[in-house]
Every structure is written in C-alpha cells, then in structure tokens.
Length: 361
Image (cartoon, one colour):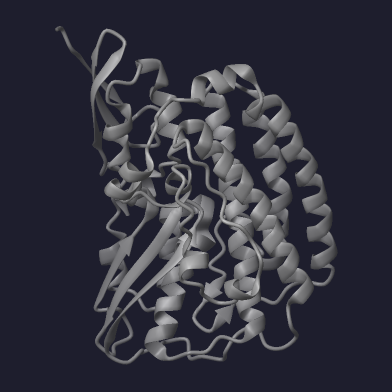
C-alpha cells in the first residue's frame, strides 16, 4: 500500500481557515484528521476581562452567520444569575429574531453546499433570497449581519410598524423559492447520486460521537433544545422537529430545508400572537450579578449552543466557557471520511455545516 498525505486548508477558501489532514490510497481516504485552531481568538478568556454587556458583540463574532443564536444562551445565563424575568413581548421578539437568523444561516449553508457540489445556481439563488430575511432583521435591529440585539432583560429595540405584513410577504416569496430549490437541486439526479448513501452516520454512531443539531437529526434522532428544554416562549408555539433516518448527506440537506419551513411557521405564530407591553427591563449599564455558577443552553442554527458562567459578584465574569455545535460535531469528520472516495470529501465536509471560528472560539 502506498499512501499519500494531503493537506486540505487552512488556506483553501472552501476549508474556512481549517485544516484537514487526509491520507489517501488511490482514491480512497484511509484516514482524516481534523487540525483546528487556525482562527483561535481566545474569546472565552477575553470575555473574563469585559463587562457583561460588553461581551455581547464579542461573543457574536465567532458565528457571524448566526449571531443571535450564538449569544442567546449567554443572555439567558446572565439573566439566571441576576434573577431577571424578561417581559413576554421581549421573549417573543427574541424567538422571532433567532428563527430569522436560523433561516439566514441555513440559506448561507445551502449556497456553499451547492457550489462545492458544482451547482452554481444553488450558490446564487440562496444567497440572493437570503437578502429578504436579512432585510427583515435589519428593520428590527438596525444592522445586517451582526446585531448585538439580545441583551439581559430583553432586546434592544421593539418591532417597527408594519413588520408583520412585511414578514408575511417575505415568507410567501421564500416558500415559492423553496419549491424551486427542491425541483432543481433536491430532486436533481446528479445531486442525489452524490449525496445518497454518502457519509452515513447511523443513529448509534451519532449518539456515541455526541453530534448535535441538523447532523444529529439527519441520523433519525429528533432532539432539539427548543423542545427538550424550552426557553422563553418556545413552549407556547407549535412546530415540528424534522428528522430523517438514513443518516447520509442527503438526509442532512433535507433536515435543514425542513427547518427553514418550521422557522417560518414559528415566526408567523410569533408576529400574530405577540402581546403588547415592554420589550425589556430597565437595568444599569454595569451589571454585577451575585456570586454563583450557571449553565444555559439553546438551539442555534448548527445545534446546541451552551455557556457556563461563574460569577464572583464583580462586573466581569470570573469564568466563561462555551460549548459550540461545530466543536461538538468535530469528531464526525474522521469517522465519516474513513474509507470514503476522495471526491466525496467536499460532500461530507459541507454536509456537517462546520464553522471553524465557532469551534476554535
């Protein structure tokens, strides 16, 4: 046997500043070793030197495509430490914005997946259609990609006038586009051949490796923090947790497309049933939560996102640790790529929606 070692990344634009060391024998991958750490910024340690409110824009930076999802659990953790009860209207707005961000993230992923499978239309369409959702979030938060919108005690801004009607119009447009995605991409025989039966992660292996999010649900496990451990007003809204049993790349695509539909379902309910009233608590700019430890978890676009915070009663956290979904899904790389064809490497890689900055922190 004559093996060749290939370094995929970190400079390759498709690797996302992440290195994957691949050993190949012919066109078969014999071993795949993830080599993260190229974008490690020490966010956890930096957060221990910043005030609680100052940490919000910092903690968004590792996950630009899902900035609300990346700070949701942090804000919940701080509120638990401080014993805060968020106004119901603020809870609804949080859920609404988190679901808009989930849709943005999945559309971004779909565009990247399309181009790496050679389908340039599926690169351009989702990126263009994503603008309709970005415009909605911009109307609420005032910025386009990172928002610093969730704060302890609620959200920064109330919903603007006419937001409900704008949202419903945007969703009518996106639903038609999802039907077109299915016709030209999901039902495309070439796409099906490249993804069905490729990168199979069984139910048992998904549990054993501890993967989360769409990767877990693509293996037939309908686990979702929004259902398993509801927070804010998720327990008042009706939605399904999509899961598909085959565990291959094709199933992971179907999960994310169905999640976009379920996010629209959640947002529709939120804009119709949101109560009147305050959207945040009036709090001092410098918070000093009492001493104690707290753990909070939410369901971000890529899966369960969790924070552990230790407070000593000062204006900065004594300790802050992050458990991100991309880090949790990292063990799947080596497992899924072993014995796969080299040409299937991009198919498997991007089916996991791995975000290096989220894992490196």
